[in-house]
Picture 1 (cartoon, one colour):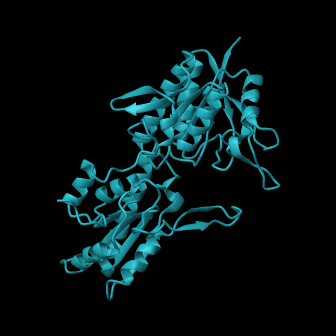
Picture 2: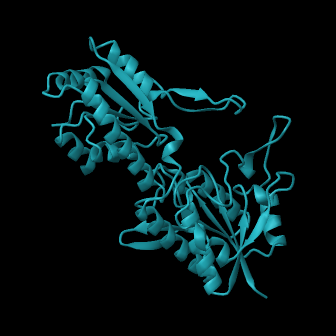
Picture 3: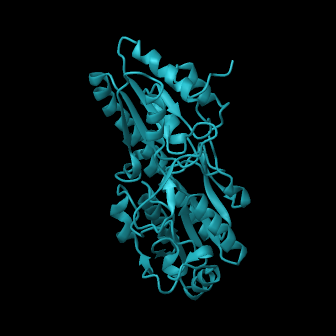
Length: 364
């Protein structure tokens, strides 16, 4: 009997997911295993969701290496452990997932996702489901791994945006604020800000003093080229304030981070006279499009190692990039602890050494 594994992509989409799917399928096929693709996160294993499962063959995935998104679909609103019902109630359908996987003769499920998806996998593993984790998120906030695929592409999109904003900022002598994603982690903002030549970078991990930021803008206005580029992570905020949130239409009142760039603009306008400010919110453009080569390579290596782990029945592990190798790390509760920017880290010191304002007076 042919051995069979499942594969699912959960949480927000990101560049590199299709590369990971391709690698799992190609390597599994080479080792004599079938791969069933589970649609829309784990919804494909739940009755009544409209999603299902389908066999993935090498010919199906060969052309998808450079495609963004995921051919399996995904969702960040279908947690089977707290599943939203039509009447507004929430029920635990985790045991249904485990039972359905057994009906399909799945030896394990390879779950590509961030901290939410891996936390769900950890709980399902405790109920008897064999799981293997693939770390993906543009936020780069997953513990145990140096990087997650999707992050490099998101940084590249943000850097390109800064390059484009620079020309109009110079032309009009404006303050251009770019709001980027990242939830509670400032990795996109920090790395894009350094690579894109920003003058101010505001991170969730360092609550910013609006007066310090205003002083930095005033110094820029006295420079030979009096413009400024400001990068604001969506989770950035001053001390004593929560990051701004808003409800998207059709999400039944649930809220998401958004508005940090506009809040920064309001605080600056109150403190800097005759300052023309514009705000650009990158939003979901950071998630879409063609993955950069690094994300394709990382996703491919992670997916290949995941298929090997499945073949060897090495379950309950997360594929982690520990340069220069991909390693198998035990999937344990520490996965729920996000990997954040350390305010005392070398990369932060380097940013401030270049004169980038992080919303604080740099430590001595």
